[in-house]
Image 1 (cartoon, rainbow, N blue to C red):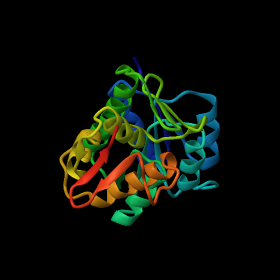
Image 2 (image 1 turned 135 degrees about the vertical axis):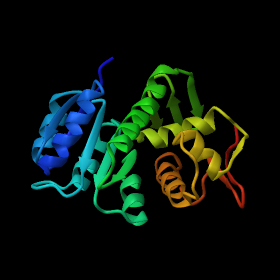
Image 3 (image 1 turned 90 degrees about the vertical axis):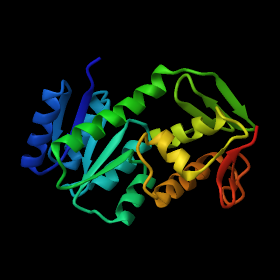
Image 4 (image 1 turned 90 degrees about the horizontal axis):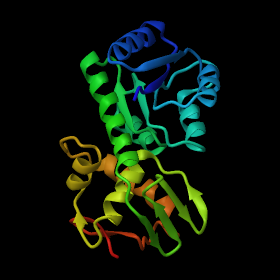
Length: 227
């Protein structure tokens, strides 16, 4: 299956480099040089992945990220010269699936793209059953979740974290375990990333995020879903 990728980047040197590299890897790549054009193209075609710059003319990358996440769970990789942990945490919390700091290597770009798409395919190709937890309904066949009948718009990472817990009831996961299972990468004390994703997930699935009933904190150890 050929994956289509939308690159929203105003720097023509960067966008052409990304398109050439990914095209050689067999991907179908479209380019948009402004935020407005990027959103227009996104609404007209189904994409497997969006690669998004933050500093764009007309509409910022952050606004595009927020807009896409109101209606779609398409994987999104941020590419930006902003390289602080806080910048990364903020945009991951807004729904990005990965964050790549400029300048980046061709090898790293290809690896990140394939890793995100691989995780996305796992969601589609490994169907399970529907899980009902009080007012929370999780359709693992169709990558959907509902709270009291209302749809929840989960990012891929949030979905994979939720799936990890509900398919392993009563199992305590440390932050290291969660990161290695969901990100499929070695854990390098990425507590802030886990904390951000857990907070955002709880805000969506818990009726009282400050007093969670679904995914509970096991102090000093990690987290657990009690069936």
